[in-house]
Image (cartoon, rainbow, N blue to C red):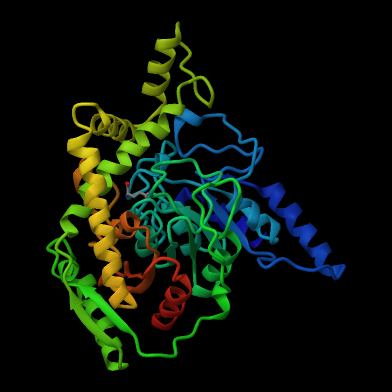
Length: 447
Ligand code: GLN
């Protein structure tokens, strides 16, 4: 009831596309009975959580914040969401986002932008912007978002909350509407590390419905939040000295590194000259994957069909032209171009090779250091409308976050103070694959 009231009172933030009021209250009653009857309680007993509008949930509408899925209801529940429910969490509703998770500001939603609760004239980041605001504004205790190139960490940084992107394959993607399948990761927003760790414990692990999910055992993340050794930490010269980096974020990052040195940890500068290639690689490969993934939305099987369609071809063309927003169309066109016969080798194949180089160099760094630290974003939350008409500027927002997705490694963003305008600053920590247990412990130590 408390959270439903908060959602109602802060409606102007435009966080929820659906609120499951009746269902959430019924589940709360059910849980109360369970408690009274002395039955065993789930690991997430009573946790009130929201889910990004790209995660399917049986008999509930899901839209990917797009017109093209208008009226579509899922026939099944995705694995991560099902696991939350099985452990007695209460799902309170579906959260706004950028259409098909493409964007860095939540302004690409067909349902209007979400506002940053710290300053309503600013964006919350994206694409899981509303999932971050939900936690920031106290509309629920935690949220599930997705991170293909930074969509959990960047909004977490802009909203002053914790956001993790786990190792690729750590969490099943079954029931996640695909954007770029070899990058997509379900991630978690929370106020603190412990909640985050408990939720990952529940949603991670083998799943027979996703052939890419890892069989690696899921450790008890939340009970191991301690650091008892001196660590080796790297920071990347090209990020700290990046000309796009705002000076207050730079200072906040440096002062964290100084503090770590004082605590006796080994902190060293490393160079990663390929930083400039990370964004182009990401945008070539993700648009290629998106163009094929989104071909299923054809006016036949899901959601929207143009009413004036008069034959099959016009049904495809009109439904897609009317149903998809501008950014999604731009990416489908880019992706189709890089996959076309005459350009495939020049773009797609080359980007795959560069991806391998970036991944190998990143993992080599992580074989020498426990963690890599960098700012999560080059700027703090920007004003609504700033980058809306300039996609290339918008893509630059992801400069520090995409390395983790290109490499498949886990990364977390934690709050690192505020700037002079009281806007949250994020600090990003990356580590090697399947080392979430160490990542959480170190993040907790830094908070
Ligand atoms: N901002 C990035 C993009 O637009 C990341 C999106 C994401 O992680 N889903 O592609």
